[in-house]
Length: 86
Image (cartoon, rainbow, N blue to C red; front, side, top):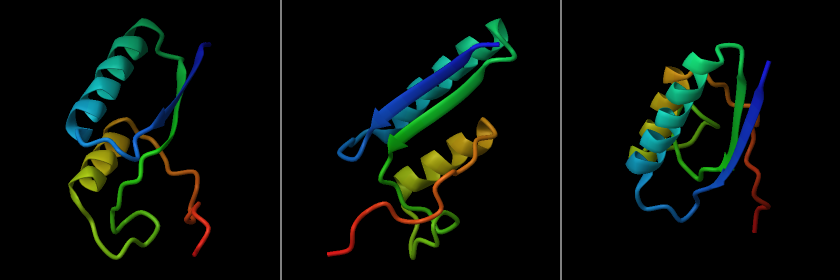
């Protein structure tokens, strides 16, 4: 069994489509070669989706992140905001 963990910081990324396409290509390359591989993707994605963390709104990067998670059967591990309120 192989474990792969990526940490990504995307808070200032302006091209989330390319970012999630890149991650998808890597996952789809690794899993057929090693089906028992466990992949963790950690990061500060800074995206908003109404189904995640009860965000009051959804915007395009949030849709991309949500779709990526569904496609790869990922789960949200942190269920609360990680910022310190001002």
